[in-house]
Amino acid sequence: MSGLAALLAGHTAPGVYRWHSAASVADVEHAVEHVGWNFCHLDGWAVEDRDTFLKAAAASLKLGGSFTGELESLAPCLDDLDVVERGTVLLWDGWSPLARHDDETFGAVLEIFARRTSSGDRPFAVLLRGEGPEVDLEELPIKH
Image (tube, rainbow, N blue to C red; front, side, top):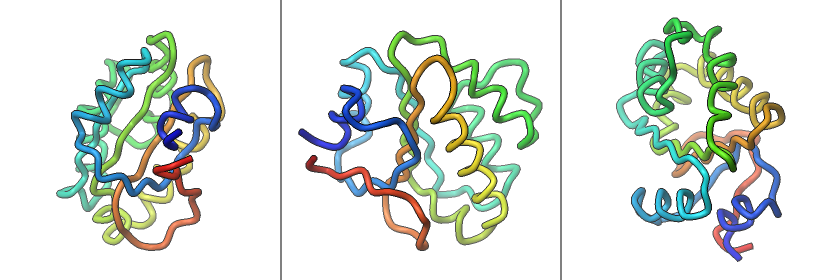
C-alpha cells in the first residue's frame, strides 16, 4: 500500500509530511477524490515571501470571506475546510522557495498546518513534495 493510500484509508494519521512521489498532479487528485477527500494543489515555485504565499494558499484552498490576507487569519479559515465528508489533502509542490527565502513565514505556516492536522472534525493532510532544505518532518513513504 502506498503512503498516500494508507493516509487516505486512515492507516496513517493526517499530518504534514515530506513526499517524494513523481506522480502527476492529476493522478494525485484522482486518487484523493476517488475516495471522497477534497484535493488542493499549491504550486509554490514562484512563492518566496509571506504575501505571495498567502495569495497562493487562498486560491489553492479556496479560502472564504473570513480570510483577511493575513497569516493570523489562515488558521481559522482552515477549519472551514470541514465541508467534505472524508477530509482534505493539500499537495504543496515547490515549497522550497518559501523555505529558503522566508524561513520565518515558512516555519509559521508549518505550525499552522500542523495544528490543523491534529484538530478539526475532518482530517487535513499536507504533502510537501520535492526537494528542499532540511526540515524536521516525517516522510510519507511512496510504498508503505
